[in-house]
Image (cartoon, rainbow, N blue to C red; front, side, top):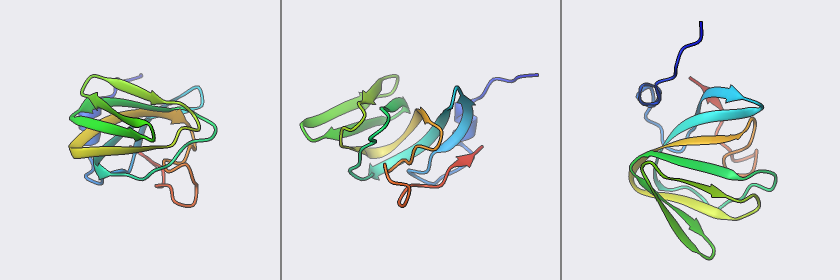
Length: 117
């Protein structure tokens, strides 16, 4: 029988930052949770938009034409091909949705490996 997924419980299973964990999949997409703090890296995704939903804390999505602040309960979608750099002054927890296999850095050579929890 299917069960609901408790995102807080999933987030409690790891401490690594910027290392997304897949908690579900649907229609060729991964639903992931991730803990973030500090600056990630400037990157873009040529083939897909980048979806960020802040579960707790606050992040800044730095864009070349200025930053976008995203607080808990808010979301932001970076259009495909747009260079961006996520940043969190303090630890924040996010939910991400993207096509399965999308490298989090935009480059398979530098991307974090996918982990399913």
